[in-house]
Every structure is written in C-alpha cells, then in structure tokens.
Amino acid sequence: MAPSSKDGATEQPTSGGSGDDRENGTGEPKEGAVVTGNRRPRGRPPGSKNKPKPPIFVTRDSPNALRSHVMEVAGGADVAESIAHFARRRQRGVCVLSGAGTVTDVALRQPTAPGAVVALRGRFEILSITGTFLPGPAPPGSTGLTVYLAGGQGQVVGGSVVGTLIAAGPVMVMASTFANATYERLPLDDAEEDPGQAQLPPGPGGGPPLIMGGIADPSAMPMFGGGGGGVPPSLMMPGGAAASGAGLQLGHEGLAWARARPPPY
Image (cartoon, rainbow, N blue to C red; front, side, top):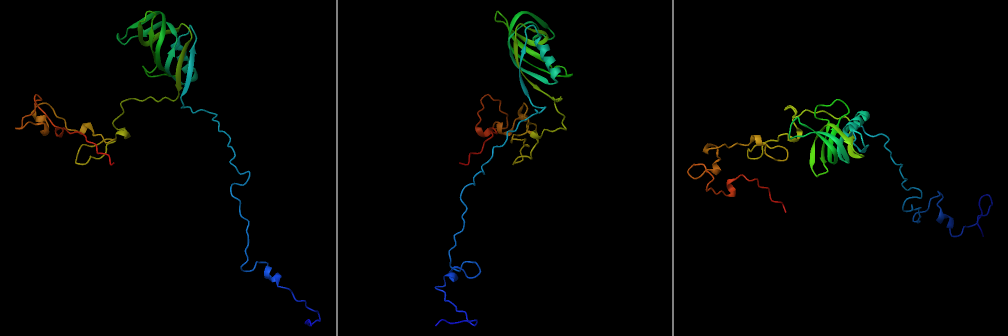
C-alpha cells in the first residue's frame, strides 16, 4: 500500500534517481562528471592575415642630396659657359665628372708655362673633362674646367680652360649637382682638435703616448741625430764607439720591431 501525505495526495516513487545524477539542484554537474569544453582551433582565424601596407612616396627631395645629370651641349655652344649658366639658373653647384664629344677653338692654360695661354684651332676629341661650377660668388680657383684633348695627328694637349671651349657637335657631359656647399679654410686651428686624432694615455711601460688606432705619436718619439752621441745604446759597437754601418751586422733584437700578439687559437 502506497504511503499518503498529509493532504491525502499520493506520492509516486521515483525510479533510479536519474535526475539527481544529472543535477544536484544548483544547475552544476555533480562531482566526478567529465565536462568537455570548447577548444580553440589552431592557426589564425579567417580574415586575419597581414594586410598589404600602402607604398610610401617621397614627394620632396632633400636639399642636400646629390643629383646625377647627363647634359647634352648643342654644337656651336660654349661648353664651359653653358654649364656655368646651368649652375646659376638652378642655384646648385655642378661637379663635372666626364664627357665625350668633339670641340674646337679651345683656349688653355698649361701648367708647364705659368701664365701662358695656348689657343688651339681645329677639331679635338675630348679625352677627359672635369671641373666644378658654383652658383654664386666663389673663392678664386674653385670654379673652372680642366680638359685633355686629342688632335687629329695623335697629339695630346691639356690644361685649364681659360677661354672658349666651343662644341663642334653634340657634347655629352656627365655631372652631379649639389647645394649648400660649405667653405672651409685649412689647415684647421689648433684649438679645433680632431676627435679622431685625440691622444690616449701613455702605453704600458712608460712609452710614448698613443693616438687613435694604437699608433705611437711620432712627435713624442726620441730623435737620433748624426754622430756617436745621438745613436741609441743598442746600436753601439763594443767599446762605446758608434757603428758606422760598414761591417755592422745586427740581429732582430737590435731593432725595436713591433711584434703582434699571436692569435689565441
């Protein structure tokens, strides 16, 4: 007979307690149950690849950058005057590297005869042409051209261009341009010491001070003059007389050879 409750309702027994096995009334799995979590898949998620970056374009050049030029001087024009006009018009210095072509009516100053100007008539092939042109007022000697020419008979002549240099045909000139050139007066003052030549403390053994790179300063080395009084003791003959060099034989120990350390391996 089934038991009855207070209110007369009949309670039906549960079978096996399967509901209690699944849940304990709090919505959490019972102790000892195995729970399988969501594992994150390996690799990048779709659509997460590196996107291509837009290219970077330099819209303005640096004013201090060098620029290369291939200049064509038309026939009948003065090569030197054309390059000088280009430098003034662009307000940039021009360094002529090389050139090729034929010129005529050349006026040169040759180094063998100071102040002598040689005027050449005829056609000459350019072997070498170098020089510098500055856009504004420049110190003497910093602007001009130097050329070497070959004549029709094989003769070679060269010098500084002091007059005309007329192109007999198209003359190609390879040059580079620059800006903001700085005028320097050399040698520098003693107060402006070169950091690359700064002296280091004296080496081991009280030797002369060293400059950068481990080289001894020549100004601090002892100087040996002529006669027996200035000869170092290692070069003295037995008896105190200085060696004259006639029959003198010295070993390696007699000279202060710089010996490098052997490698550690």
